[in-house]
Structure formats: C-alpha cells, structure tokens
Amino acid sequence: MRVRGLLFVAMTVCVVALAAGCTSDPGTVALAGTVSSQEEGQMEGVVVSARRETANFTVSVVSDAEGHYSFPRTHLVPGRYNLTTRAVGYDLVDAGSVEVPADGPGSHDVQLQVTEDLASQLSSLEWIMSMPGTTEQKELLAYSGLSCAYCHSYERIVRSRHTAEEFAKTIPRMFTYFNDGTALNDDDSRGRAEPFPHRTPAIMEAPSALAEYLATVNLSDGKSTWPYELKTLPRPTGQATRVIITQWDMPRADTVPHDFAMAPDGTPWYADQSRMYIGKFDKDTDTFTEYSMDPLPEGFVGGMSDIDVDHDGNVWFPATQGFEREWAASIFQANECHFGAPTRFDPVTEEFTVIDDPSKECLQFVGVGPDGKVWMNNVQTMVRIDPATEEVDGIFPFVNTPEGAPPGSIGYQLVVNSKGDAYISDFLGSGVIGVNGETGEVKHWPTPDPGVLPRRGQMDSEDRYWFAEYGGDKITRFDTQTEEFTQWPVLHKFTTPYATSSPDSQGRVYASSNMSERVLRLDSETGEMIEYQMPTNFDSKKILYDPTDPDTVWMANTREARLIRLEPLD
Image (tube, rainbow, N blue to C red; front, side):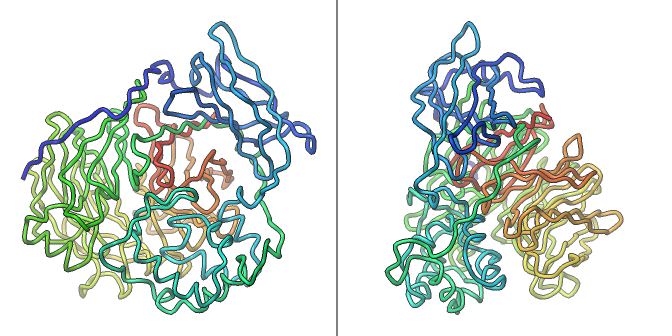
C-alpha cells in the first residue's frame, strides 16, 4: 500500500547565517556581559538564553567562574533579542530587549535577584532530594518503569492536596492516559486519554504504599507550604559551563517527538508519537517540513514510534496504521497496542509504504545495522527487513520461547553490531539479550546488579553496547566480544538516566535525565562526569551525533516539542 505524503512547509525562518555552527573557539562575539547578584556577586553556572524576535529558536550559553557569558557571532545574527536565565534560587531582574549590532559586539550585564518562588524552579530530582522519607519510599516513586516523571515533573505531586485515599484512586487513573505522550507543567494539551486502560505495573494495581507516602510530602491536610527544606543541586562549574545549546521550536506545540534520527547527510528527522506524521529539519534555513499519513480512526491514540534512516536516506518507523488490513486491525485493537507496522518513507517521491509483516507483531523500536538491514522490535520479538526488497527476511522471538531470555524479560530498544547481530536491553529482567542474525540463537547476560531497569542506548564502532540503567543510576557498557560489563555511577541518586549515546571522537558518552533536566557527559577514559544544565523543561529518549559534525550532540525534547543541538566547547 502506498499513501501519498502530504507535504507542507511548517515554518520559514530565514536566518541562514546561524547555520555556520560553532567551534571550540567562539570566534567573533555577538553579545557578552556579566551575570551577578547582590548575594553572590559574579555568578558562575547561570544559563543565559537569547531569542531573536520572530525567530523559532533560542540559543543558550552558561556563565563562567567570573560570571562572564558570551554568544558567538555564528549563533546570533544582528537584531533585537529577549534574554532569559535559569539559575535555581534566582530570578532575572527584567532585562528588556537587547540589541545585537551588525558592526560589533553587543554588551549587556545581567542582574539576578533571589526568587520568591523557589518551588516553581525545582526539578523532580531536587524535589525527591527535598522530600522526607526512607530510601525505600523514594525508590518506590522514582524507579517505577512508568514513573510520574515520565510524563510530568514532581511539582504536580507536591502541589496537590490529595489524601492517601485520593492518591490511591489517582495513581491507577494516570495509566489510562497515553503513556507515550507527555504533560507539561503549564499545558495539558498533550496528555490524551487512551481508548483502553493500560496493563499497569503491580505496584500501581495496589498503590496504597506509594499513595500513603505521597500524601506525606504534598499540601494535604490544609498545609499552605511544605514542612521540609527545599534542596537544590549545585549550578554547573568548570567544563559544565563550556557549552552552547540551541533549541528549535517544532511547528506544532502539541507534537510529542518521542524519537528522532540523523540521516547520513546530517538532516534531523523526528516522529510524532501521538499523531500520524513525521518531520525533518533544514539546518541551513531553520525550516521544518512535515509529511502526514492518513489520520487514525476516531477514538484511537497513536502515531509514529521510533525512527531511523537507512543508508540510502529512506526513513523507517513503526506506525499505528493499517486498520484496513485484517492482521493489523486485530493487533492494534485486540492486543490494545498503540505502536505499529513497519513503514518506509521515501523523501524523494514523498510516498509512504507499509511493509507486509508475517510476524503480525505490533512493533515499537527501529535500528539500521551497519549492513543496511532494518530491524524493528517489540518486547518479545525482533523483525528484520531488507530495504532493497522491502520484505521481512527474518523474525526472531527472544522471549517466551524455550531457548529465549528468562521468564519476566522484556526487551526495550534494539541496536545492531558490525556482524549483523542484534542486542537489546532487558528492561524487567535486568540484562542484555543478544540475537544471532544468521542462526537466531538467543543469549542472555544479566547485569552486575539486579533490578536496574536498563533502558536505551547505542552500539559503538567497536561493537560495545552503551545503555542507561534507569533504576541503577549508572551508565553501562557491554562489550559484545568479551561479554564484559563496565559501569559508571552517575553523580546523584535518583537521576534515572534514560538514554545514552555512543562515544564521540574523544571517548565522551552523553546521557539524558528527565529527573534532573540535565545532560550528563562521561569521559569513558578517566571516569570524569559532568552535567550540563538544560535551559528549559527537558526529556529526551535518544542521543545522536551529527554525521557532518561528529562531536555535536542532537536530541529531541519530548517534553517541549523542540529539537536540540548541544555543542561542547572543549
């Protein structure tokens, strides 16, 4: 079946000069100044963001040890800009608009003052640091597979006035919402109810213990404020201030970009998990272009899941679609699945092709192997597609079979090594599952620690699988040749890293955290770890490099419908 792509150019912001990029030398300065407050004097680690009037992007830098900040000319063209800041505990004294002149650097000093509403600035990690309670109670909250922070910050919990009895009803109700959507603190537009309830984790089926704990940390029983000290993470210092972060607004504020991909030519592609379209971004013109498929039948929730680009530039993803096909309709309705069927998009012809899948599985994740084969998976089966023939040439069950992974295993996101073998994190079984691409043989390696909820990651060029231990608070490497694990603890408990990158040219690995709203950077040679403070609410499920600029990091901000470029300056 072929469905003609409906193309529309979503935004046309003509700022071609921005595309020049950034190097380790900031070059000519566009705007600079000093950040200070009466309490601290010159302040290090303050995120300063500039947004040009009418632009669809924001550029952010971080003040150094002397409180100095600087935007390079490559990132700010002449014009008027509004400045904002992020520094927990402080608010910006109104800066008004700032002019970036064409004939030289602009200058503007930034003054901060102690905030009167610290609670509105805390990340979920800072809330759980502040909350009283035992380690076991906090782990019950933070390490659930579908934790509250998956869709929104803990601020909603602590500001609520629910009693334990009300929480016991509220917690299961949350699982009637689309669990691959998201809900911003100030906007409910992307939290959508499912037509069917999810199969909830056991703790959520009997949520009394968690409900009782949450009622002790919120504003129930007539409290007007929290009877505990609000604690904060330290601001970035040193290398963590050496970064430029750019965020481009996607055309639709209700987009849920659960995943994105980088094409071989460096073009970013993204998928909307809650609606039937994909999009790409032109870095030279700051322009988004979107391609739509037929909408879902009324009452169904879903869209495009994971996304990847093959060696020829074709875009692949599982899509909630194909209801006119008997096998697809039975999967998506009887099995209550909002993921989908393997689908290919040709950017040249702008046509979608749904692939006939003999496995009749409802698929979620996709990965293109070094040999060009396209793999997709759900929690128990992998499917391999030959892009040359657009046919499934391998079906690999890896659980619920005699030779499969142990009972209770659930596969998450697959990656493929240079031999054409697939590996996947075992989310509930706490391990790595390997599938031989020729024989279908399945092997299982338990992680050094049990119950760590390994989540998402990438395979590197040396066939080492890097992934995040969401419940173990570690960045982990599994060498598929030696079958050995290496682990690096993150800096703070309850960071719950979600996804990792592979190493860049300097051996640095990045990890995302929606709890801390920071990006972690590990030096895999020295073990040193730093954290970049993100300028806004933040949640990202995949971290990739630009093939045309291999040390530049790209992500999609699921929580804010933005595309992110992170450029380390050292």
